[in-house]
Length: 178
Image (cartoon, rainbow, N blue to C red; front, side, top):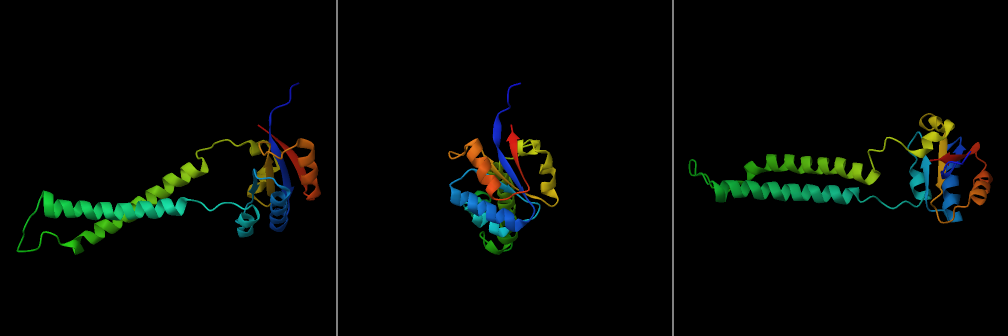
């Protein structure tokens, strides 16, 4: 029977400290295509994996500023240029009345950009991922911690990577099939 293609190798740990230490050692060993799975947020894990900062905040602030300037300019154009109405001697350009709508559009554009950027940057929707093929991975949402080294990593060698993961003293090392 032919063997299924391999996505990578996965190690299971019992505590967050073990996972952070394993991620740190994995990066030190030279692996760059690996991921960690945890039922709780672990701030140290981000640093141990040497992940780059997300461009999401830059997208959100840019969208907010553009929404603010765009709406403010649009309201000015409507009230002072396109359809000027002089009611009771009031100036055509009364900027205090523009503030509530401008604020709302700023928040709306930033919020919509957050959702769209998050979906694009995270690769959603992704209804299937190969790590779900590992039977014990269902514990990742309860109380276990997992580290997966992908087979696409340039340093990946099945036997050496399996030995390296075993040296981290996990509960179990599993092959992740595609």
